[in-house]
Image (cartoon, rainbow, N blue to C red; front, side, top):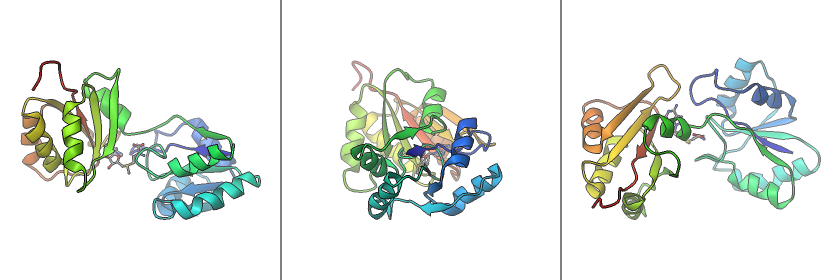
Amino acid sequence: MLYLVPTPIGNLEDITLRAIRILKEVDVILAEDTRTSGNLLRHLGISKPMVAFHLNNEHQQVERIADRIEAGETMALVTDAGTPAISDPGFMLVRECVRREIRVECLPGPTAFVPALVNSGLPAERFIFEGFLPHKKGRQTKIQAIAEYPYTTILYESPFRLVKTLEQLMEVMGPDRQVSVARELTKVHEENVRGRIEDVIGYFGQKEVKGEIVIVISGKLKGEN
Ligand code: SAM
């Protein structure tokens, strides 16, 4: 069978007892980056055969890996951080396993968008997860669509593009839309900056932004232009 095992997004304490047990029990660990995951496994005292499984080889690997699981091996997929298949490799392998009726189990565990959403203080009963915005083609259309969503929207973003992306969002949504930027979740320098989009741009525009970022955007309110 195939397990998808979430790993910490910063704080190494954020791994479940079950995740550790499964990583110890499987035959092979598929890793987005064998060096990054090797460090985590060493920290956990686990030594296992690893196979590289990343966006660049996902296509070619899927069939081969599914064949091996069908032949009896149990595997766990981990990515560099968080939950596999969430803006990370994994979806194609899960789809292939489901197609072949191979048992698939995703363990619950760390992912960046849930704490970012909950910390934002914006409505969390319904939300849209968009992951990374396209860099070029389709970017403006996507931003215009997001501006119209009546639900809280979550984006992943790099620190280098944060201010530019907030400015592009403001151009379409106006300066008063509420946003929350979660930076370095679970790490020593975690911060959550909440407020009008214009004020949040003012805050981050003044300095070099570092670390990992999630942007949470309030949904369009009834009557808002
Ligand atoms: N699979 C991961 C998950 O479950 O969240 C996401 C992987 S995606 C390649 C990496 C992006 O997730 C980062 O660019 C950032 O937007 C977000 N992210 C990951 N760790 C984070 C953290 N500690 N704080 C804020 N955002 C984080």
